[in-house]
Length: 257
Image 1 (spheres, rainbow, N blue to C red):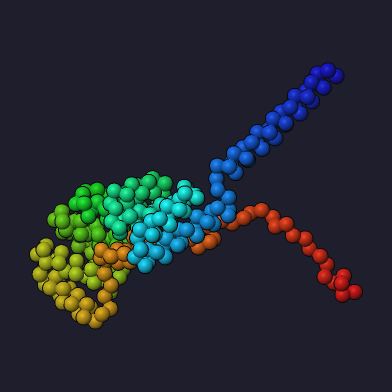
Image 2 (cartoon, rainbow, N blue to C red):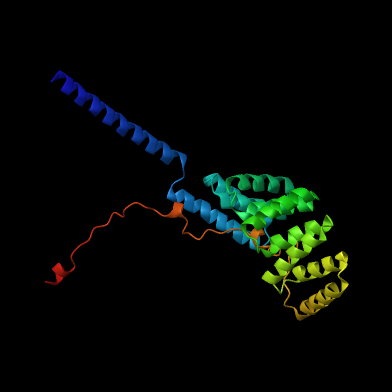
């Protein structure tokens, strides 16, 4: 009997320990991560920042993204958006820092690699730019901006066959993109293919005169889709309250009888 009672006591103590440990772990988790309301505030600040980006108010946008990160430091979209805002200020040191941090936390997202490539390209670090854009294309092989920018890097490195292949991909994906068409024609001319090069340059002139041409340029909203701010849809898993609502159901037919 004594052994039986001792065993029961030990089991009870073990269960009590598990319950206490679970309670402490739950409290620590709640204290360490922002609640749903705080996350909503962070996403709201992030979306405000994206709206400010579209008004070309880069400093105000950067401030909004910093507010979002202060509420939720793990909000990765706010950090890459901060990199985009700082790039357009321009604050290249800050943009590089935030883009690197986001690339570490979101390795499968093309945006941080795209921004790292743009920064490296602007700073004439061509090998690093090429690696970054290659990572973008590994994630999205037909992205127009990634193909054009990597192609431009290869042109600077005199790798014309590689550049031509990338420009063709960009042009196939977006036939109305003037940058893709002009870059392809120019690369063909430089590689010695004058006939096709001149034909494409003439087509570029016609497209430009029609007013229908788009471009990859230096201004925000012209830099490629992976250099545009990311908004919250409100459907993110961390914003969904999984708790059962405190509601009761009543039989409405009772009142009718």
